[in-house]
Amino acid sequence: GAGVSQSPSNKVTEKGKDVELRCDPISGHTALYWYRQSLGQGLEFLIYFQGNSAPDKSGLPSDRFSAERTGGSVSTLTIQRTQQEDSAVYLCASSQGGGRFGYGYTFGSGTRLTVV
Amino acid sequence: DQQVKQNSPSLSVQEGRISILNCDYTNSMFDYFLWYKKYPAEGPTFLISISSIKDKNEDGRFTVFLNKSAKHLSLHIVPSQPGDSAVYFCAASANAGGTSYGKLTFGQGTILTVHP
Image (cartoon, rainbow over all chains, first blue to last red; front, side):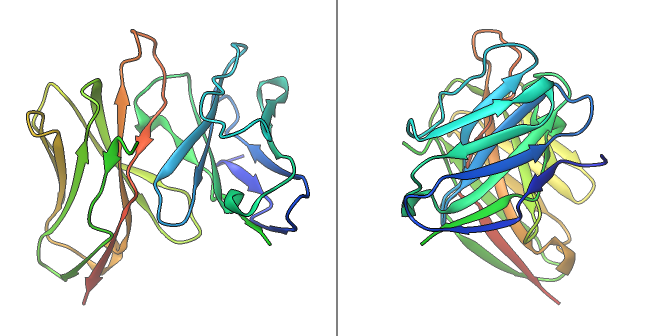
């Protein structure tokens, strides 16, 4: 597609339920990043995938969070047993190669997750 | 541990005047800095960047200044236009042991409102 697609755009879930957030990167982009923005906070790095390399999971806040990237394309971020502090906008970005110059990033519109 | 800080949550400016957005960082390993702009319900988009070997980079109405000794950068928008109203994030990247890697650390964002 032309851009990074994220679904759903909004998700309201009950505390304790599991949620899956999906990211469809730009075709051909080998690097994929997940960030989240909590209220009043900056964008917090969660996880980074680059090609077939092992992902950098150093930003995942707890073991309730996990992410996969199947076939080097679509990625799914899973949050198990959601808590209210998980409420945030979850943003996915992709870039061509793992270059560290962020102008190569294209962000999706995000998934707004609300845990009630 | 907020390594990148934007201490002004909001800024209001008259159309035609200069907008100055500020950003401070603490990690001396950061050597590449970027500004992103974000409209509501959209992902952030890249605006302008600067390498630590420079102290100024200009692109049209946008200029970024870097003061390494003070660990401070600023974004100047001249002249400001109503369409510039958005949230502005500064971000920084560290050369992680020579690995070409795109992980960015973001500030909390500043909401800019440009009044007609």
